[in-house]
Image: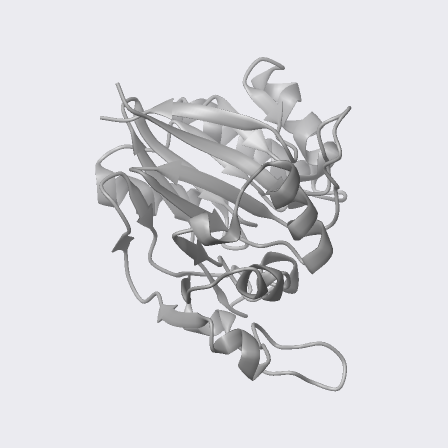
Length: 255
């Protein structure tokens, strides 16, 4: 039985006893169907470079990059990847993730000409099938209407596995989109759920929703926050709600 492997390359937390670096940002390495996809890149170039080195991941071994949305902690380290590569790389993202440089900060992804020479821009307007078992969702609007976010789905033997950068649109909207596509709700969630800070009520709503539909395998990091993860455990228990830090991996059987 073939397996897919998902490893954290960039997050605020890092596995103890290693030389991985934890920093604000998000990146998953998805190994499926003989290909490697980076979902997110993190914010700082030197931290992504360090963590790829420690994980023994060569830049040219990456098949493609997927960026979920326009926030810099999901794309800022792209120059480190392109600089280390010989070949161009496809970068998938909703069109709203691209922006321009301002006096203070940026409105979305913007890079020097040298970086863009190594990038093949792929705007995501609907569902995209990347390989036999790996998909990008259609762009889903932020709850405040300020942008769009895409998610990744692995079609595993037990059901869809959802990977989330931040979930600015609300968890139920993503789950319904996955069910419409695959005929089943996600059996596992990996990544950020935007529960950092004092969002106990939202965490409780998410926990009740996940309990109702039977999704009890959670591997959470980034903007979920330790407080958010702890709050989910109040309802869902310790067994299924896992902190998922740099250097940690999870495997899923695929058809």
